Image (cartoon, rainbow, N blue to C red; front, top):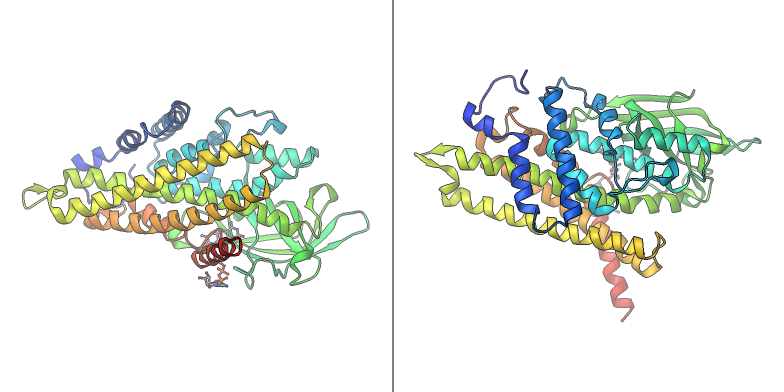
Length: 427
Ligand SMILES: Cc1cc2nc3c(=O)[nH]c(=O)nc-3n(C[C@H](O)[C@H](O)[C@H](O)COP(=O)(O)OP(=O)(O)OC[C@H]3O[C@@H](n4cnc5c(N)ncnc54)[C@H](O)[C@@H]3O)c2cc1C
């Protein structure tokens, strides 16, 4: 079985565009900048993806349901490496931002939408990891999500409250037994139609951000109503529209009562933005490695197209952008990990503030990189870059979603411009 309806790329080139060859180009570029441990973990994840693709005859075609692959990747600990998960006895050795970069890049070259589905599970899992308080039902949810037994999602956005996320309309009403009744509408929540666990925000008083709470929901409960939103650019991901109707959240599932939600929401944005930056760079590598192989083989006017200046120079330009963003992001990831280790996870205010600013900068820059590189790489491949014969079509479209999710381009610019004001005030 093949991914495509009609073969457009010739046999010889198509045979060279394998995942294995694309990993080879990536590894050639990364081996000198990665530590031995990082490189070993990268190749470990790559080996798993290669074997999984071969053993399961995966074509990445439109008929495949990649949510079914999640348990196999979860068993290996490839949903996220942001945490050790000692609280549920997983005790991963390769953890932190840099190791999660390795996991992300290997998975994104394997299948970019599948990698994004893990990102959505991770933003649902992070609040549980931070606020489980060793309560058994929360640990059970955390285990399900971290090991890929189930998918997760995060419900912030509402139909009328997107960017202005803290002035929510969804409400939470406390009951005498400490449970809460949730009512409201949420939208654009990645994985939600396939998720077993959701983390949702709601407020004790409409439009009052200081009364927001954070709630863990089992989607089998009464009052959870979810339908799928069509987003053609990421056609294999399931994105949801939820109506929460008198949905009762028992006390032990309340991760943060009214007053705690806003703080929890902001603490979750930093890892989410870093994860989007990692994916942006990874998608760029996915598209770039296709274009490098193609331009070295495709001939026009009796010459490999790479050898025409109009082709070779722009491709070199993309390569230099991707490598410099990668090394910059890697340095940031390693510094972040070092600070987290030094301060045992409790970063001093001034460092945390700088890291928040940098997470915005990298989210902004890497989403922009992905948009630029994925389109230009497709363009440099001509019609072959736009047809369904390779993953190029997936890179092209997923790259267009990265600037809006996790805080839009304009919001990152707003945050960064405010940070510039702080520098001046401190003079
Ligand atoms: C593929 C996809 C996946 C998503 N996954 C999730 C998810 O898992 N969970 C979740 O909760 N949400 C998710 N979202 C929602 C996403 O976070 C929102 O779409 C985003 O926050 C923007 O909100 P909005 O769509 O309502 O746009 P609006 O807020 O209506 O914004 C429209 C435009 O106005 C701009 N704008 C708004 N305010 C300002 C301002 N003050 N200054 C300058 N410009 C401004 C925005 O940048 C944007 O360009 C997802 C969205 C997509 C497309």
